[in-house]
Every structure is written in C-alpha cells, then in structure tokens.
Length: 368
Image (cartoon, rainbow, N blue to C red; front, side, top):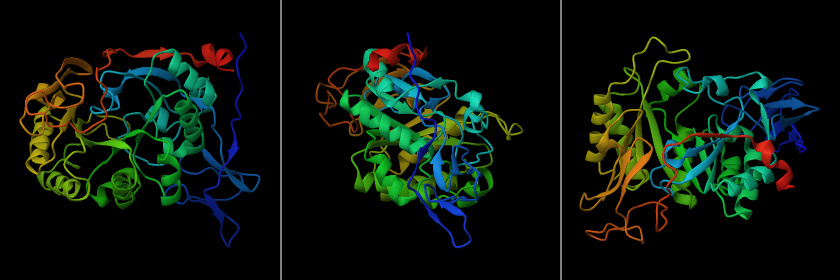
C-alpha cells in the first residue's frame, strides 16, 4: 500500500509588512514580528521567501479516537466517538500546560503522522466517528490545515470540533469558526494578570471570542477552566467569571471546572482538591449557570446532566462512560418537557470510555 504525501509548507494570508521590513503575523494577538528565517512563538508559522507560511500542513502528532466527553463536550452528540488529532506548538506559553510534550515541542519528530484532509475525513467516516476534533494543541495556529480538514469532513457529514484557548484575531476568527460545529474554549482565568504572567497572553481577546461565538455563530460551545490552587481558584474570581458568563453568554453555556495536576513549569503547585471544584460548581450554579461540571475527579453530581427546570437526571456519567440516558427523542426532559440545551440525536452513542490510536496511512489509498 502506498502512502500519500502532503505539502508541509503552505502560504498564509494573515500578515502584513512593517516599515522596518519585518513581517507581522496577524493570526493572533501576539502579533509576532519576523525577519526572514524566523519562527513565531507558536513554532509552526514562520517567515520564508518573504511571506508568512504554515510549516506543518498535513502533519500531526498522532490520531486517536476518543469519547466526545473527553474534549470535554457534554452537550454535543453524547456518547459518540471523535477522531482527535493535533500538531505541534502553541501560541500561548502556559507554565501549567498539561500537554506540554506536544504544545511546547520544537521537534519535527513529534509530527510522526501525515494525512491529507480527505484522508482524515474518509478515516473518520470509515471508523464510525461522528466528528473530528482539532485538539491536544491549539488549532488556531494550524488554521489553514484545520479549515481544509473541516471542509472535507462536512462533505462526509462529519462534524468538526475545536478545542481552543480562543486567542485569535477578528478576521481569522471568522474564517476559522465558520467551519466549526462545536468548540470547547479554555477560559484559563478571569484575571488579566494571571493570563499575562502564566500564559504570556491577555484575557480580553478570549472574552471577545466567546462573545463572538455566542452572538455571531451557530457553533455549540462549552467552557473549561483549569483551577490551579492559589492562582485562579478564589471565590471572588469564580464569582466574577460566573457573573460575566451569565451577562454575556447566558445560562445555557456549559462550564467545566477541571482539576490541575503538577506539570511543566509548575510542579511546585499541589493538585487541585476535589472540594475546590465542588465549591466552584456551586458558585457558578448560584449565578444561574444551568450546567456546571467538574473534571479530572470522580464526582457523580459533577459528571451528571440535570434538567435546568426540574432537576431531573437526564444524562448520567461515570467519567467518560454514559450510565443513563433519559432525554426524549426531541432532547427534552421526560418529566417537565423542558428542552436541554445542546446538540442531541434521538439516541446517544455507545462508544464508551475507550481510547483507540489510529494509523491514518492505512486509509490514505482508499481516500484517494
């Protein structure tokens, strides 16, 4: 069987020339200013031949089938399998990165797999996946590849999912999300000082992305905040974030509070206690957010989807495994008939909690 080849380097359009001869990348608010031969902080966008190019088109750190709940998305096609992949690099510099071996990689050997957009779409269809997820590192930095994959997926009726920090400029934001069906946006804290000191970024562009998704798109999205002891887990910050969400996004956007574990450059910080997540969940619910979850801990209430009106259990979960399904065929509560916010089919998927690595080269020839 032959394997396909894909062009590693492709031209991009989000840049302009400065008076001093450097080229400014306009993909994200970092605005890297590059001389010939230099790379942006993200590692995958660089100045070559007097233009800004994406250097990792068609290359991935690997492909894996995950449960959609792992993204995490609890209100988008629950129980279904999602073909997941990422590339290398990131446009944030989080000192607490949980995927640092991928997002902080500067080594091309990280990108061990290759696949054209058509192969990814064909493989997802062949494997019974309802969606393809751009994840592990932030897809905005490989926007051109992600958009082409999304287009190919949509021709096969495969949905697309972006797991992103939302750190992107206005025009590429529009160009990217018009091809995305669902997203989980990582709202790292409700504090610009935290963003600047611990991620090298700023809060406002992320809030702008969230408002854009709510007001200008039909993308289903959920929010995740990794709570780090002593950094972003105070009651005041969680109250402020919850209030902002209610005022700007409404009560139906699901929020996930996830537990930190020591990693990358923050190994001196202890893991997040389960009690912190439970407290954050109660604060968010007290502001009127309907669906609040806890992650990286075993918590029945924090895993379960309840009716926003009567409190009836609608979807039970044990980690990533669905344990009960009580939505009716129209996605409504069987007791009070209130619609549950989200994208649901008449039946849940039955993928379970499995994680299955996939070799995309096995599907290349068939896709062609």
